[in-house]
Image 1 (cartoon, rainbow, N blue to C red):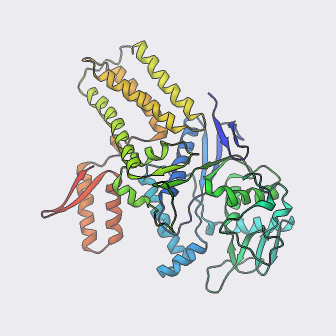
Image 2: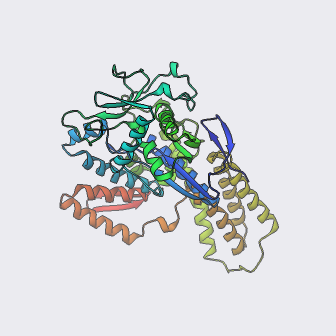
Image 3: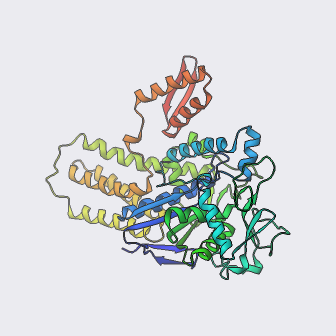
Length: 468
């Protein structure tokens, strides 16, 4: 089996060969923590969680770094609106991010570095670029000399003179060229700032990830990922900064997931059609949300509407029923673990597992990998229709499913579910929190229960609950 990854840099699928055998260094751009995350943020979270988990399933040790941008214009504006400091705003939404992450059945990254905790590395990076002639200061701001890096545009496959820069790149008369981008921004009155050789200020957006990736993963990494919207200018600028400084290839494989649309319209604040993950989790189980995200190849656009998410929920219920039925049958039959599994079933299970791995190794083709799970469901239903089922065959079915679900995670095991007494205790705690006006804790408990498929209902007799 050979894992192939579509590399945005080369525009083709390539055999994956890590820099060091058995070890993978992966960096994915994380959120700007000024608000709750929306489903557009959730897609790369889920996609690269699957990438990481499958690389680990293949026996690799994955050093997975996802950053937090915890200072920028949006955070500053949010701090003014909330009448709180920038660090306080960041702490609030980093906490909310972790709740959503766990509520989506995700595992935390190896490390989540914050910009504000890596200012020394950022300043050192900028200083080295200036020393090499790739950066210059004007009016307290420091800019990158884009024209000095001859390969600028190689990731997005655009020519420098034809580039159209994103919203974070402004035209400034102090720039030597309009395409130059900011590395260090002079502080405005009243803004949060750090001291630097060029005056008080804060880092530009692009330099953050270059500095943190270098600090925690080294000059060269295996995989750099993020949403399609980050390919240009953010990742293009990262390539220019890092490779100008080190003289080495920054990332051997660049991966970008596609956009999410809402009812076939681009998701945007101006349209008011963004959906927050914390709200989505109140309506649907995390397995259904993951299924929806993985039912389309990660590089393709994904359309969200009530029909697609409802279909995802029905599909996960079908899978869950198959697993539950096997486990129930195992409790009612005699254990015959010493008996051999039939060659016919063994062959079909081997084919299912081979299909799963073949599809996952074809650029993490999760939609087709999921079809292998439904082939498995069919095998379950056929076996359970027989009046006599061997426990050894039922367990073999579960082992195959567990291997696939270990990565896809579109079924939550019984161990992940809350017991009735745990639910009752959480409800009591929530009532007490509301009585003491601890609204944050009350909301946390409500969201925790919703993520586990527990719906709360107010009745004349008090608060009641039921499973979805």
